[in-house]
Image 1 (cartoon, one colour):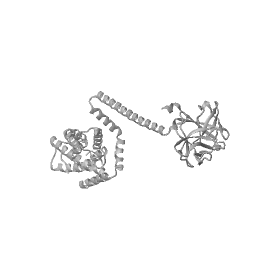
Image 2 (cartoon, helix red, strand yellow):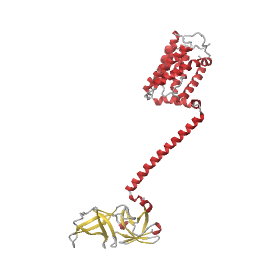
Image 3 (cartoon, one colour):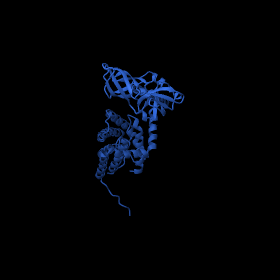
Image 4 (cartoon, helix red, strand yellow):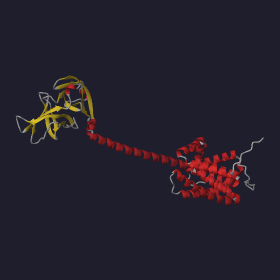
Length: 160
Length: 264
């Protein structure tokens, strides 16, 4: 993993995501980046990047803690899952992003209750739309992300 | 010789990060907020640019957005003005009520130093040029001590309530009466029927309001002696002591009612 490039990409993604804060339905760039790194990186890199992406999500979110745990757990889980099931085709990637979006959204909202944050009634609809939009946009962003991080998406060997 | 990089197992890495996550989750909000604020401070320019870009992209018609923005501004301004108006109306009502409760608010107190004093009269250094007219009530130590009897441009004479020439309409025991100064320096309340008036020593005597001169009762003194009149047993012989020691006064205030305000 080219960490400097990844750091730049993460900051840009966090800033773009923060710009979406006012929009009700929006794609989650950080979720797409987490899915990308979990699918295309080595497991230990994927664990680090997942937690870092979670931290970035928390820094632009309402509270710190829930994003790190949710992104870290699910990113690591996806990375381990990717050892068994290779997710290379775009439709599969879209489905993966969609499921990950649902799980991270629910997990973050559950953990945020420990921070005594007010519970939004229509949060489930928001999570659904965010996951759906991320699933549509996500696979298209994988290519520029792979180019920036110099990752071969065609058929590289994974190091465990 | 190249330095060997320490290898950390995935499990250890995962556990450490997860532990850090839980620590942050259960840390107090005021502590974790510092991280968020630091991030916002460091990247404030890109964040503001990103937000403005997203806002401009969210509405396809800039003119419409501008109009909506101005309309919202105008509506907010109207709402603020309405709130201010309601607040002013409430304030006005409160002041009106306050004025009702404090009738002397519309009065001007003209201050005058006592230049000359006799047992029945005082001369003060203010007169017609300050708005004084004959008959106005004079206050000393928050009680009526007399009325303006003579007037020039720059000084005035006060007829004291203890003067035999002074006659004032008062209320004693919630009943109307007239008091009159006595030659011995006290105040008498003549012709009070024992049948009608139940007067006791210590009762307070208030000056009755008089049109354009006084709008509220003000204390004059209190009943110092009250006994059956020796000459006429059907009447009271009432002696009233002034509420203040007139001899020790060095200055007085003349009540000048503001005509415009008193008519409101």
